[in-house]
Length: 322
Image 1 (cartoon, helix red, strand yellow):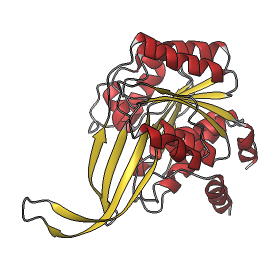
Image 2: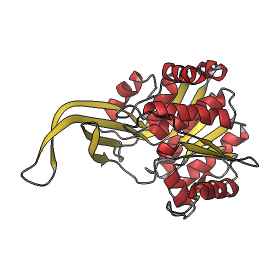
Image 3: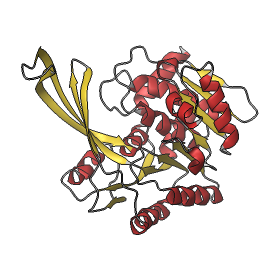
Image 4: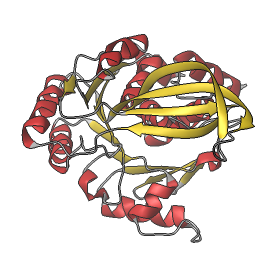
């Protein structure tokens, strides 16, 4: 609880793939006569921040200040960002507009609390040198203000190898913590970061292990910790909780706090956001992972992309203590 009191003093730089999460809500009462697919009777629509933008929304929900850098297009979807982010108390001032890119938007059709289908609109082309420099200039204007940096990688082409290298080296020179939500099989691009937070499938793929293999989480965590020059690794395992790996320390496992899992959409964003805010507030890796685990348990009990709030977290911690 003392750590939570420091949340409001923290500024977090978030660099990554921003997107919009659009939800079409309805119900199903019949199968289409045209094809063996459900007919969804659309009842409601909603639009929220997704990807790195959802990480920023979670940071704001915890009472800290997010500084968001990402890339959007110059399309109709891009025009929606300022209002969507403003609702979450996140600034859109440091988003880079690139006319040749599609603003990433994920549309999920939900019926009876179940996802029927997801439709993705996106550009995955890697940024060219000029575009990368525009992003880097935004980062440099904010890096001094932040206590900690989050890399939110969704493999949309924004986080180039060169940009990651520059960001990690510069952040380390300034003695700031940098935590990464990684993507892809090649984690060498994150060498030098403070902490990585893959899920169990991502960790296994990065180590060329099969998820059916015995103790694959322990094997992949230990291998990544040793090979990547990171101080810690947090592997999320869905309903099984998460496991923390630290150099020269025993593995610490945290059981899931979710009473009922309705939707895991955005749960990883909540974990990396709460983890970073806690670390910047004076928590050690174990304390920060504990807070992140509780936060994840709260958001998966909601349907759709949901940001954590400081009130939700405080109540959960108080109930845990009781």
